[in-house]
Each structure stands twice: as C-alpha cells, then as structure tokens.
Image (cartoon, rainbow, N blue to C red; front, side, top):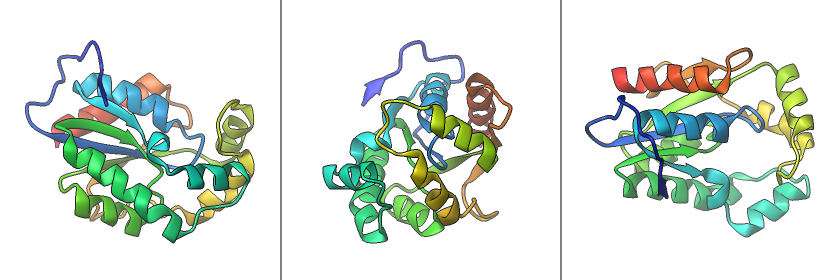
Length: 177
C-alpha cells in the first residue's frame, strides 16, 4: 500500500476502511484513488490482489465462480484490516462477498459506483490494457446485488458525475459517518 500524497483537510482522525465497489468499467480505480486522497488514505487496487489463476480465467473471458473469489475476498479483507486508513477498489458484487469482507475487516463501508448498462458498455469497449474483457460485463451485471438498506455504505451514480465529483461525494459521506 502506498500513502497518497496531498491528503486533504478531510483527513479522518481514526481508522477508515472503504471498498469502492461495482462492476467492471464503472471507475472503481479512478474514483478510489481520488477518494483515498480526500481521506488521507492509502489506495489499493483489488485487481492487484487477485490470484494469477483468477486473472488468467477472466482474461480468457471465463467468469469467476464463488470458489475462485473466496481467497481474493479474504485478501481484500486482510488488506483493509491491516491498514489504518485504506481504500480498496473491488467489485464486491454480491452481499455474501461484502459479508465476507466485513467478517475479516469490521467497520468497512462500501461505496457502490453505479451507472447504466449502456454507459458501462461504452466505457468497457473504450478501455485498453485491462485484463477484464468487455464480454464479461453482462455476467457482472447479472451477478450484481446493489447495497441493501441495512448494509454499511452508499451508492454514488457516476453516469454523469466526473470522477472528481463522485470521489468528493463519497468522501463527504464517509466523513459524515
């Protein structure tokens, strides 16, 4: 984990554990990096925590199974639990995945980045150099379980918001508790 330079006045005085979640191409890494800067937190891209076998599978256009995801979710939780102020970008598409993260890193909050499937398809098709092929977007959308009212976190619509505006909104919510 690397500490983000230029931590703003919004630095939280105690531990902060945030997962920026959502489907592929929604902007998790971009918004997560900006959010970490707002919070004076380290940023970790969950893609970097994926086992090589998972990356190979997804690169081949094969969706992951729950059995594939458990070790990765445990690594996400360990990363959050080991840090004092940490923002992790991770899909966390289903409640059971978020519950797994919470079991290993209590106090984590989730920022669900949401956009319409049409916008996501345009973004996915415009990306280069990412192991996740656009063809897997539909399987992610089918798997996605939006945050329930009793889960710790918020949804931020990024359909029209700039990454900076989305990060600022998420930071204000995290800071407000």
